[in-house]
Image (tube, rainbow, N blue to C red):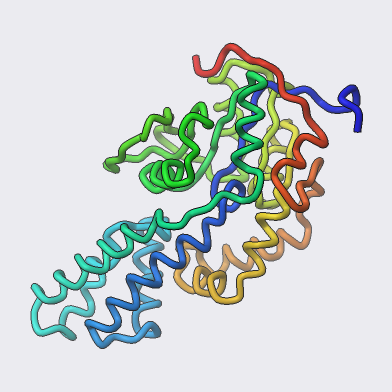
Length: 288
């Protein structure tokens, strides 16, 4: 494809989890390791723990709630004392936190592609629904510092985190989850460019592709990330079993996938396929 047939863009906006790296693999290994310890020391089974874990995730709207084990207080009577319960919770939390960012790897060609986009003078923006502290730690572990100009995520509320040198901005007040286009449009407005200058990339056709289309922004479907996510035979069912999503929401997503929008552009095998469709140019403005 000749350069003259490619679209020129100044801002690359991207999803983070399962688009730039394998989120599910890292998340599963961390929580599974912590659960094995908790099960071994408590005598509780995973079948007993899973329903209660899902209640807690539903309460907080995340599958990465840091104090998960400490809120499994319904099981305190199964321990010799509350002190023993909380001591084991502390151990499980520590192991999960230590494992969370270990051995994370970006998908092939991701880092090289981000470097190339940056060298062209374009800006790289991450838009994620994940917690700031988790995203920050993963950006640091993946070696993405300096490659991302700004991260947009939900208001961290009382969350404390080290930004690791990567700027963060938050959607204060009401957060509109993907595929609602309001936050994407707000990002573009704050950056100070036109929609035509931007392209958005993500691994979820229902959330990412649909959102970009609703916002009138060129969309890219990271099919490789979606394929890897859906091929996981152990991790994906376990995620569904403790997700904060209701059964109705999971069913709705499944049905929506059957009628998902057709992506404008698709990265079938690797991130660097983006250069088959786009050329990136310098932009001077970023955030107002």
